[in-house]
Image (tube, rainbow, N blue to C red; front, side, top):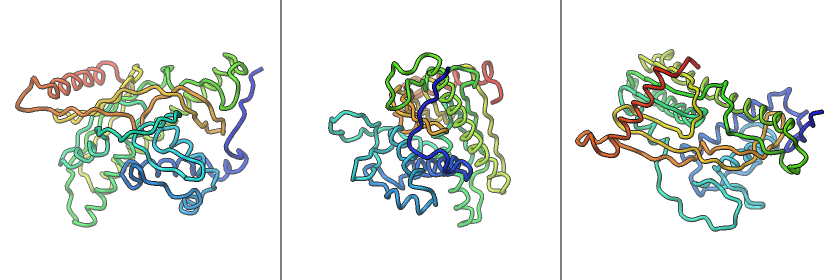
Length: 321
């Protein structure tokens, strides 16, 4: 018989019928956007749980679940009696004092530079599209705001190609270890397989949700007459992402390996699971810039090589997502 994992962190009976999952996702995505765009800067304390609950009209329990998720992703740290604050680098459980964060490339400015051009061109290889979705929606709102202010159309065309891993792949991460607080010996292969399928389906759900959101954000710009031409195409490839890649063809690239970490993951049914996962939001990115005066420079060679790799995957391995 398969053991049913214990549930933590909320009363599952309160909220499912009233859109508890939607409220959780809405708050989680909004806080990610606010951290990404600097509304809550590094080192800044977040509003209290009571203030979040009042602003978004959700329960304190929902707020607590969202903050646990942000902590697990490395966005914030929380201390008893001191609330939560934004941190730059992933959080570790040790007591070593945190050093001043290193300067590193960030996706936000990269996307901003892309959208500053009359023709926006982006090629992306990523695990879920979660990070990109937040920044693209920010740019879409900026285009609306600027149009209201000036009445002008400044973006003529948006071209986005995105590669995602095939849903049929059994990815090595996230990988379930055991429910939080449970001894390892209490869960055999059958029980862990059940948890693993739940975690993989959660990942697929995140990918679908953010891919749909990103597509809608860009296509709505065309529907509203704010951008004359929009081409968004998403394909899947039978590859496990060991890194994320963002390309502005011929101009610049961001590249970053996925770091495998151990953290807790909260499933939709309330189960909290210890798992091996990768850092997506907040992961380290390395910027490479094309040097038009030196085709043999490190940046130029990197961009040319990765663009050729992306194009080959797009044409030879990818299928519609």
